[in-house]
Length: 266
Image (tube, rainbow, N blue to C red; front, side, top):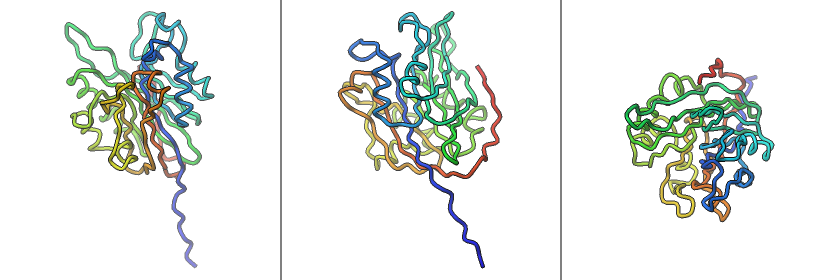
């Protein structure tokens, strides 16, 4: 008698990426609680956040990543791309699932008379049921040349080439779909926003009158994208100058196959 082989179970997970502009809304009101309310409405399991203040005087000295995570009942991982004495500014990943930090680090910038704002990336592994998902969050620069260098670095041997699937890269890439940076990611990964909207993705910036699609979720080819949306509402139009992007995925539960080694770089 031949034993039938059962396909691996499919585990649902919802990802979101959101540039929160240090919780400063378009109404000039500073409110981490409002950002937490937006994220709660997205019903995401893992959230990549960009432009977070930790211990900065301009934001009341609070740890915004921790405050938002506590409001949601999530765990948080934070990486400061910029440090000024005790003040920090950077990116975070919040998750409702057990997770571990795999790697943090800075990405290349421009070195000239006007140095560019430091940019970084943060990589976690989340355990979702019987599946493990690698998630990388990043925020690329404003200048074309630095974005290209940052894309090369993130797609290279220190980052994405070390990832075993399934994995996702999320963040504010400051790159339109026609841009070189977007195309370099789309050549290797699937654009979850595009796949989840049947080719009708919506812009994410600026929030009051969105015209540009610069926030992205890319996933490895073994991930099924079931839907995606940009969350546009009266609340999201004022909470930040970006709109959150949410993608619902299904990943295979195939046990522990990562074999990753922790590398907490700074």
